[in-house]
Amino acid sequence: MAANFVVTILLGAALNELLGTVNTYQLLVMMPLLTVSLPANAGRFFAEVMRIAAFEVFDTKPYLDRIFRLEPADPFNADFEALGLESIYILHNMGTLLLAFVYYVIVAVFSQLCRRSSHYKINKVGNKLHKELVWGSLITLVTESYSMLTISCMINLRFLSWDAWNTGVMSALSILVTLLLVAYPIYYAWKLTKHFVELDTGYYRRHHYEFYKQLDLRNGKLVLLQPVWFLLRRLIISAMVVFLRTTVIWQIALMTLNVVAQVIIIGRVQPFLTRSEVRYELFSETILMLVMYHMICFTPFVPDLEVRFQLGYLVCGVVGLHFAFTLFSLTRETIRKLRLRYLIH
Picture 1 (cartoon, rainbow, N blue to C red):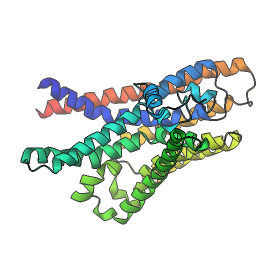
Picture 2: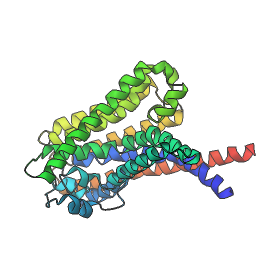
Picture 3: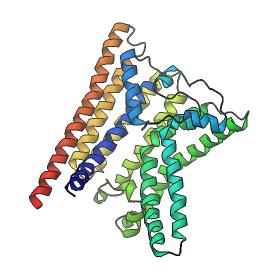
Picture 4: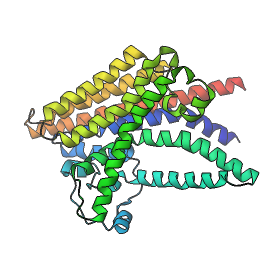
């Protein structure tokens, strides 16, 4: 029982920090996908960061090839391949996330079958699964995997093919998922703005709370800009790194504006509930801007390869600083919660 108590405290303190770290890393790994030439040291480092950001723990490619009879396809380019995006097909690049969505579908079907049962306990299990899964887990799953879903879709959209049934399935799937990803933030922006005064009521807290749980609703409707921009900026960056390959200056300009817009939302709208969340978000945006400045040095702006290699170590150190800060914050918050819990008891 004591062990369960400690684990609960640790997870409660760690979850937001860990998700925040992964979300930041999902943006960080987009940086090397700009039209830049990474030195080998930075390339290897960001490839490992990509494994964290993509939740990559299992290689699904061989099984997908067997199911869909897909022929080997060249990656988008060498930079994408180095970061683990080794294919042009959406399901290949989704990797382990695909298993998460398959698992969700299986459990959703199971919960619906249980809800139709006349047995009280089975029906109760089905209702609980439906409540937790449909209105909680799905929102979290889509939101946290939004970066990988968008970049996977954009790559496949660049190489649409209808020559065979299997490539046609991939093309149709990429179009469908892209439409859903575009509609997702737009739908929530419209729905939650329209029913803003009802967000603290039971219905919206039960069904949509995961989308706005970190927001301070006392600051007005503009706080909804935070979760909507959280998604839209990932969609914009994914489209930019795939379709604006020949204009690195526009890539850098859009990436800079992306970070500036987030800082404006944090400072002007003040969407978060706690100051610690504000500080963490501002620190993360600072790291993103610093990494972006390093990416400028990996263009012809800095022609010396030796200088680029040394800067590669520096950009690894900047990302490592973010990880160290997150680890420190996580540890401090965990200790604080343990002390409070101890004093209460």
